[in-house]
Structure formats: C-alpha cells, structure tokens
Image (cartoon, rainbow, N blue to C red; front, side, top):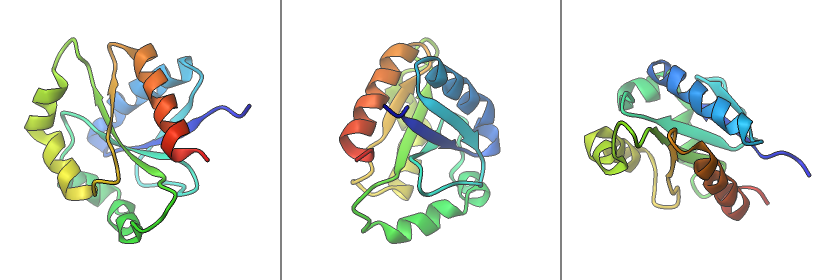
Length: 139
C-alpha cells in the first residue's frame, strides 16, 4: 500500500512550525514535505495556518492559492486548510479567534474543511489526518 503524502505550503514566517509538523507526520508514516510557493497540484496540499500567519504574506508568497480557488468547481479537492497549533501553549478556539478564522473565511469556501494538527498530540493528529485523507482526498 502506498504511503499517504501531503505537501505543506506555507509563508516564510511559518516554515519552522511547518517543518516540526512534517517531521511528526513522517514519524507517523505519512510522507510530508514543506514548501513555499513551489507546489504540485497533483498532490494533496496543506495550506499551513498558524498563530504567525498573515493573510497578505501568505497570498504574496503563495500566489497559486488565489489562482487555485478560481477552479473551485473541481470535484476532487486537493487543498486542505492545515491549522498547526500546540494545545499546551494555546487553545484552538483562541487561535481561531486571533487570526486563523478570518484567514480561513477569506480564502476558503465551505467545501474546504480545515484540519487542526496539534503538535502536542502528534499520534492523534496523524490518525485524524489519515482519516480525512482517506475520506475526502485520496480516491
């Protein structure tokens, strides 16, 4: 069976957090890599959202995001809003209220359900990612 794979696309301010998540995912058997701007639309792409994410920078550093959503009638979704946080440091609700919720609402339609990846619980988060990938992204 082929290992699941995800490409984490982020702004430069989120690279370190994205790398930590990618390493945790790899430890759980998921192929994960981090990129800024260079993407492959044939792969599942996690658009990284963290406490440091700024919407303008994310779009400027990843212009494909706005172009991709011009094609939102695609039946096979390949983009996943990927919220990375650490429950030992912050609540997901507080992060959503701080900045992530606004960015999500501006960039994604309701068909793109966000996934919250908790760095404090990598095993549970990886299992949830696998479930979501199997249900909605990998056919």
